[in-house]
Length: 382
Image (cartoon, rainbow, N blue to C red; front, side, top):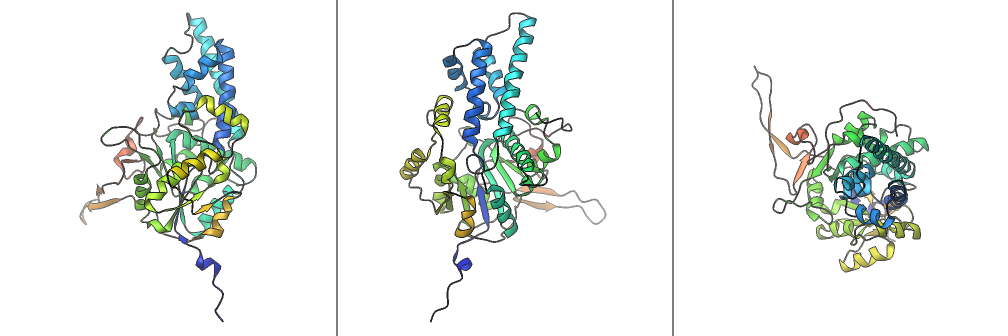
């Protein structure tokens, strides 16, 4: 009589979890659609503009502003002569007051609505307690990623999911994202500086395409390959968790397991209608549309997370792997009689990257290559 198989031993072993952020750990599309559609309605009313004009102008703004920074969107639309100009100093003051009123309401709604999916914190803790590494890999710009994580941490602490907001950055080994459009002082000035620095010390920004100079975004197997290299992780020891076809299409060429967070694809009618008016025409959302997109790209999830992120633990056996490596080699040090001043040789990256850790020259690079260093203590949260 054969012995029963050990269920834990039969599950594939994973050392690294690569998390998407938006609609994987938090319902970003609903938060964005609700708060931004209301902000656009206020813009139309307070500026006395046709809603269709505001909608058309808003869709032309850069993605960082459109999705994560309504103040930046207003300023950009104003600079492009899409909003009324002040005729005198009095009107200038009134317009600035109008912008700040819209911005404050938008920011308040963003903060209130940005919460983790149920079981998200529990799942992140479970992975961390197993000894496995986990990272966030997002096409979100750096400033926006930090702001969103701050809102998530604040709400998780308020709800009793965590005791200290600093637990959230501590759950992750590294953060991979896009560079910010501008210096982050305006958006991050009211976040606890320890929180900001905890993320920046472990942040990598994707550089532009070396030939075209254009932004490199998902699906990007080279980005995922760079992440695997950073953690010395074989492809069969990693799993990528995401909600979209782009996440799956990033993992498929490398034969990395893809856990599809199907629940993150679900949108209600109001969210769908709002998103259709504000997002790019090619933006895919909704379960049916994403399933079709995955089929076209031959994306076949290793597991579907239909109800809970904790399903990961029934599919995979998480164990400790290698930690993050800075991909640098020390080439020279001082003698026994002089202070050591090591020189570092940067190993050739697979994808163009800018590290924010102090080991790298890019620590000093400001916008647009990366967010600036947080300079001031935090003020009251908006």
